[in-house]
Amino acid sequence: MTDGWDWRQPGAGGAPAGQPGPGQPPATPGEGGHVTASPWWSDALADPWRDPNAPTAVVIPAAPVPGTEPEPVTDPDAPGRPKLHQLMLIPLVAALLAGTLGGALGYAFAVRGGAAGTVLGAAPGSAPTLAQRPPESLAGVAERVLPSVVTVRVAGVGGTSEGSGFIASADGHVITNDHVVAGGTGKASVIFNDGSSASATLVGQDPESDIAVIKVSRTGLRPVEFGDSDALAVGDPVLAIGSPLSLANTVTAGIVSALDRTMHAGEPGGPIRYYAAIQTDAAVNHGNSGGPLVDAAGRVIGVNSTIKSLVADGQEAGNIGLAFAIPINQAKRITQDIIGTGKARRTVIGAQVGGPGSGSGGSGVRLAAVEPAGPAAGAGLKAGDVILKLNGRPMTEPTDLIALVRKYAPGSVVTVEYRRGSDRQNASVTLAADAK
Image (tube, rainbow, N blue to C red; front, side, top):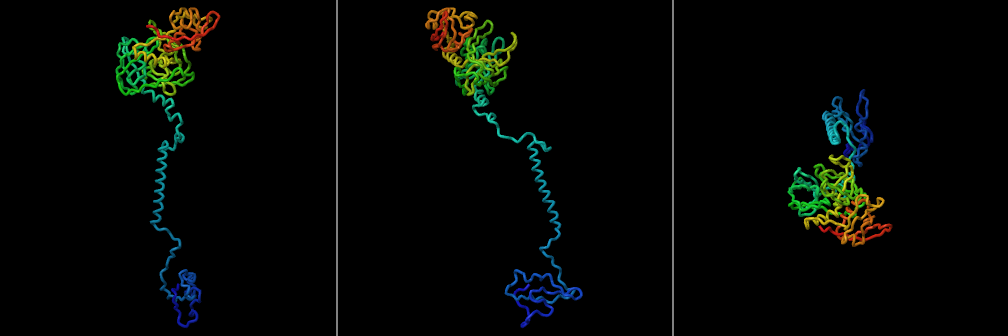
């Protein structure tokens, strides 16, 4: 390469003898004295670092004497064999990558169900709406009502009677069934939803309606929310909550199967209970007595009281989807009477009904006697009249009239459709409270 200086002799007009001309590579002696071009200078004229103002001739020193050639120089751009440390680096990097990949796969298999490669189940999806348990779901309703439901235990001569109940007021009043506390010695206890317990005292009871009220001395209680049993419709969803067979905090679901199902029940020798019940197919068993029947909003609309079952006398009855609850409007009114006066008023129509089958042709209930100053007489009814309907509800048995009258509060006005001879007539009767 030239550095811009002209190394020719002054006055020389061309290349020296034996030297290449302008633009030609220098010659080197080869075997047999032949002169060959040096490959090192084949691109001298294309050197990007060459001074463009330098002469085109490249002057090369004389060829070296044989035996004094410079050491061979390796072209740094030419491919060569890798060195030892390079060869060792390749497997090291490969091993690190393989270890990282193996660890990631092992973790994934462990999380997904095992290192054997078997993945159990599908990819997780979002929870369905029902599983999210909003407040209006059955689970949300149960969660809200359960803290207000209790187990009631009453000591008696023949042992301990157990049933259910629910908190009716923040100051400790609890509603239950009369037949749960009947025959007790006065010692009762209440077990709350959290497992704690407290002693209770009997406030009062009404055997004919099967409602009793007890009270516990405890603060911080959460009373239930009352609904309207008169607003129910067949098919409405309901929950029954209580302690069936001593299984506390049990929740079962069903629907309203029927309304105003007239019931008369009672133990031999005991009082006969009359009420127009809410029929439901929610599972109710022994021990559910006195517990709440709640609607889809978590409001108490009935007091679970009795069931029908296909068992022989003396056998333990079990659920077959026929359960009956006292309407809460009736139970609440009786509870207020008991708390206020210690006893409940009984609603009457002021007439006596005949025995079974007193209806003409199986339809209606015949009045055997009418009290002179009673509600029926005041509405113009007479003995011998056949009551066909009460507020639109057909009458077929004497118990139908008694149970439906008990449903209403004293002072309520009901419409009575009756037959006198061959004439059908209507009368408005203002019900009254029994004098006792």
